[in-house]
Length: 250
Length: 250
Image (cartoon, rainbow over the protein chains, first blue to last red):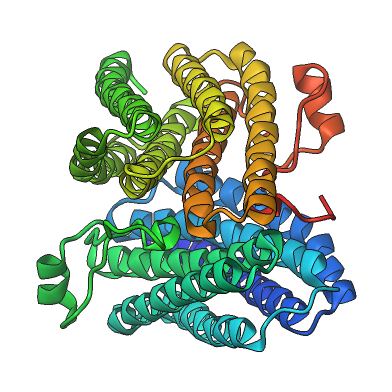
């Protein structure tokens, strides 16, 4: 590309990137608000989260359109193309994080008038903090194009998976032994599951950063491959523990 | 594009498209096998599903790579670009359907030795059939670039959502009233939830077909917008009922 065209491309790309970051900020807020609504039994906050979801949907459609537009008009190759692809993929994951926040808000509404054992909320509360950190770090890695931040994100996502499994175990044990309402327990599990999925999507965004910076697709890598590139103890099955909780074959 | 280059492009694209269809066929098989393993209490079939998942992951990485390669080399615009983008997005959804099949297989292993009320399996069985139909139709619509098939797919996906909500209600009621094991009920709910998600991903693939053929992004459209374009009663919230089951605010 000539210098002039290349500068125009960079300008357009950085405008898109700024919008992705704005979307990321909104998504962070949605997740935080949804969790606070659940923990604080605050139905009006939950309703606010649900009312904002449409805004994220519009952002996704607009950003997707802009990304395809820049590919069609500027015909980028190599790392320029990777930049755009990484943005498109990140936007799709951000929108799905918005969906998960919406689910948590629904559970907050369902549980607003329900008393649950404090211990179960404690686990959810700690997941909330860790997931927000992961999401914040993934967005920072995206903004700074910093692949070096990624290993820590992948490791933290494993913590969330473990916390989620613990929560499922606590909830089912309590229901089975003390005869609580399964529907109430299930609502808290759904919310925790949504939070666990937020962590997975943040991890995806982190993986796209590696692809963007190094041209290397680390999704589905084996533990050994990821260890070689990114340090020890990284590389869990991408499916996540999610719905496997409570099965004997994980 | 000159005629020669355009023919080469078409050839490359149709080669990628064939591979997407192969991946689609494998994904269909995985979903079918996983459900049969669960319904038939067949752990060896479930293990076969889990062993095959890695193959789908490799297909995703390879197809993603080929799609980005064709954009970089051929620099398609307009409908040619939409073709490639539609394939990339479809591949991502196919891989996620593979993840869901893997989850169902895990639940099949967990439930292999457990007796559950036949009524609960009946609902799962009917979901299984409907979801396979939806997935098959979405893949047909993809192969034939037939946007006219899409409304029926979107409507059928709603049936699955309803069936899923019924299953959750049956399972929780049974557990609450008859004191069954919550973990067993939960495992069946997880499997049904994964199946419901398969329907959502198939719906996404159908929506990409509309984008591909008409250049129109119908994700997140309101009921009115979708109705205008696609006939009556279409256009539910994209989040799906999923985790909202059992809440009072849906």
